[in-house]
Picture 1 (cartoon, rainbow, N blue to C red):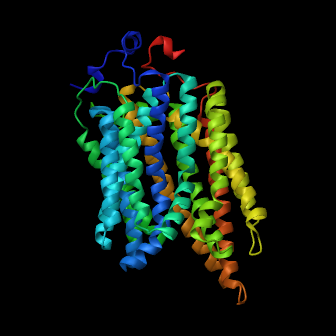
Picture 2 (picture 1 turned 90 degrees about the horizontal axis):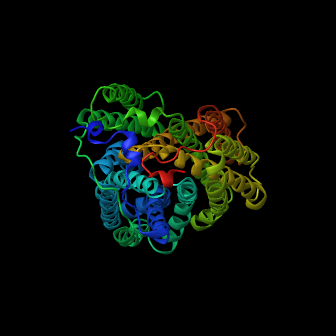
Picture 3 (picture 1 turned 60 degrees about the vertical axis):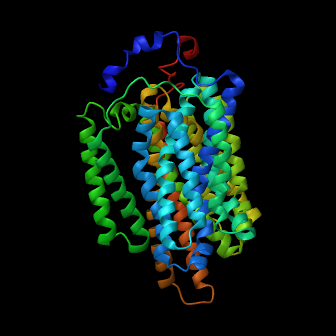
Length: 503
């Protein structure tokens, strides 16, 4: 039995009178948002919180810089390559079930990593975190999409969810700094057990799910080509940072990965139960959301990675002060995401908001190019962070809403997985490109200036400026795509909602 034949036609779906209620009562529905937001926060902050802990972990366990890269790459490979499978499984076996599996598995993997006595076990734990994160992230977003079905409620819920997605990296920097400095790097992993325990208790009592109406077969050729292609692409981009763009170790996996992904798309047009139904991505609003968030995600690495270098190397901030220094970014994202999400998205849709938000973020990044070796945090960094945060909040909330709007419940999991997939790929591309541009700019500056005691610091600052300008370019491109691709007007109503809820 296929997915397409097992479901009633659209008209019948809309006319049914007994749709399952995802939660009981309005208060239960909003409590479920807290549970889903906690899970999203755990996944998002994990990248930056572990990065803060890595230098200390390296000294403690005694591994090399190449080993340090695999602690990051192991997570990225598993997470990025398995997201589409995780999203489709949540559609087939139940979103709440996959949500709980992801939460518990992520917690167990975090405990394993926190206990790790050597590099090998730490890498295994990080890969397991990525695998269970790939089950958890799309399940959380799809539960949000199927729980909040009216435009007004969706806007509020996605405003909060988008704010957490955008601000999670800054939270990770702060929490990672505090835990590393005052406890142990191992607590940067153990903290997930606390978050997961609360989220599991909330999920068991507050979350409900649509009943499974079909038992479609998994698209095995699609799974193999999607996982293989994404592994090649993410691995190759990860090798760029250490081996350069011209190395076979980077180019061969990227080229093979791209070719395999083309094969994946061809397979999806021919199989009865595709892993990624092309109807999900070919919608203008959803396609625009995926493009915009992927490109904006690449630009964000100019903030979290290279502005961190400036705070630590130029302003000599401690890990805790660095985390605190990013709080204005978090505040800006929270403010604009919740405001835009609850008030503006239901009225105007994403088309005016995403381009304006990306332009504002580009302006904030351009302001950071004024930084010099004598800049202060208050006068040089703070205004740029606030402006960038306000801009990104206008991007994240509408884009995550658009990425799952108008999609049938049977496709909610894979539609949610796509936005996480493009964020992961965008982040990998951003890391590879911006790291390469920074290294080239710094070396070129050092070669073309007379040696002085300050030359190394000046060359590093020049590399930061180069990255900031490239991030400006990424945000401008995201703005252009938002203006051109998104449809005008409010987002489509949930096609599976009963008529009384859809208007």
